[in-house]
Image: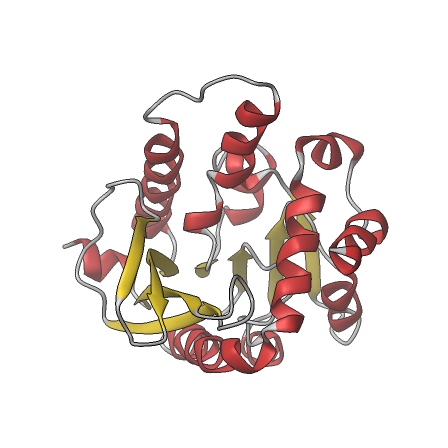
Length: 250
């Protein structure tokens, strides 16, 4: 928790987003990603491979936009920077590892946007004319800060809020897919809690009952290995990958 607190203090972000809790959430994710680096490696390699394949299959290569770029652990930045004339990395918080990585590429830019509020305003503007748009392990994260805000204020969130936020993001991707060269979506969908005997002791629908099409690729992400949440339990997320979202929607 001390590492997460330190990251939350020093990661740059506008005061408004800091007050909403995006910097805190980024710090928690950053700290866990470092603690669980070995367990996360297969997932991150799969994700980078899907994004790289989507980029290679994009015929026009003027602008690539990555929504939910975060730490860039799941983003093949060097490959995107080689293939595209411009790359925009979009997130509410850009941690220092990402800021340092971007310095290697003059044509890669950072865009700060409150993605959880919907794909409008600055975000819609930076996606306009994109040849490739990537939503990278973001979809299940979108409801977290809004739902936490209700809880912190002692209020009950609307029952459909999580589903509405996810549907809004998918609707925006649908709209982009009609105009962009390609839309690539990677998202975790279901959380399983397992014991050491492999029994599922609990599960959570990360999509809030929003249905997704059949994925082109799927894999397990051991997001919290044994010892992270308890000695005898771990958390595993099922990940769906859509390197061509428009084709998956047909």
